[in-house]
Image: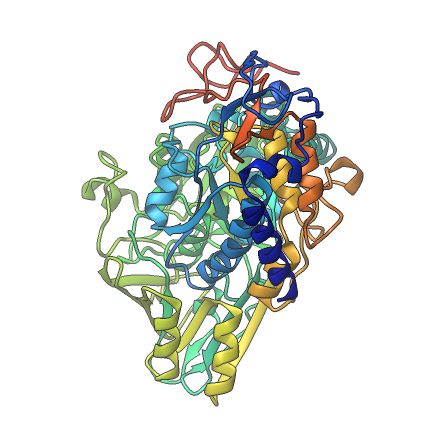
Length: 614
């Protein structure tokens, strides 16, 4: 904790010296030039020559206070980690900018609606990208940041990042005909993403969980462990009685297709609604409802043959249900945040057990990303229940799904009962499960210690330490993710739309202290500008990435110099101001979309022009 005490001391020095001295301490004294400004990284280079103190340096508009950092509340160990990180962010960024930083939790639904509709209450969002196994394919974590997913469209571009050159490569990798071509596009996209400091990576997650061995016989959790995205704490554990209970952070709906959180989508698609293919606990793709498949024409055609399997109502799963599932999802872009129809995508029914997927372009991520994401739905019950006419509001209490567990009781945001389904071709669980929502990690831990809860998933290091000291019969597990926790700056407005501002944040933060507070030093700070950890098979070589800092403890003085070089400064009252030669106006209006007259890669109707290239 010595680093934390040092930071408090530096912050108090800034406060004690008075506003008149802030500019000097910040390296923005009267003899400093204004620098080249930020016109190339989000502003338009417009002149703004009002002098606002700080000697001879001309500065632009004042940066409004506070800067808002939001993070998910009520997510157990993830929220605990966010809270630890928030302490460091408020201290380091407050010292760097001499500016109020307000980091606080938000309801998960409200936060996701905020950023996917670009309504701009938060300047930055702390984010956790779970190690959902389909993310070992680069598609989701490359494609989602393209410009046509930015703005107020409900899509999962949590950054509202808009860059035409990046978008060209991000989309092109998804239709590459071979791996060499695809890897070139992925690396080009990630190099741009890195240089722009599109996001600020922090520390990879350590994922903790624990089971009461008096109540549960634990099974092989593999590489996923107790991550939010994993179904294996359910599938691989067995009750020593008839059923066991597990904590869950939120139960918003049974129609998980409508959710923006990838972990929930991934878990539900394995647990209650099975896909054609999915990943096992060792992150290996395997057939589930599919018996096998054949790829043809460089991934423009894929023929799939189904296993014998039944829905929860006992009816057989057919090729017609497969056709309906995917074409229904593809018809509801925006309603289903992860819906991504391939160009010219359609599904043809050959016979009851055979279907052919046909696309106008190669779609290499069809079997590795699309299939694992969407469990096959029962067409007849979906249509009759209203899921066809009003998919965004369709939420059956006991849906007819296709997974190894069926939902038998549901109380929104309280409780869900799952019972084994005996018509599944791969998984045949024998134990019932009760998912119970807790409003805090502390409440869940107290329940576990009292013998009222059998499995604790996704909890913080402090809770593990407490359970270890107070509970006699338990088994713990930990895993490390392949995407770091990150600070997602919003690219559509405010100071975070500028690359130099984002770069300064990435340089200043003390990741070593974050690691110590959240994970007892068991993780490894990410110092490069990327969302792909070294363990990820598609990470760029280091010489293609921007190194944010060479110091895990952060470099506030270096970050301040970076800001000065880009023309930022502080007036005589200590207020942070934009460079004089940039226009800080939002890049497009709140809640709307990037516009064609500002972005050459967009067509007149605002769609991405696939023929545009850098």
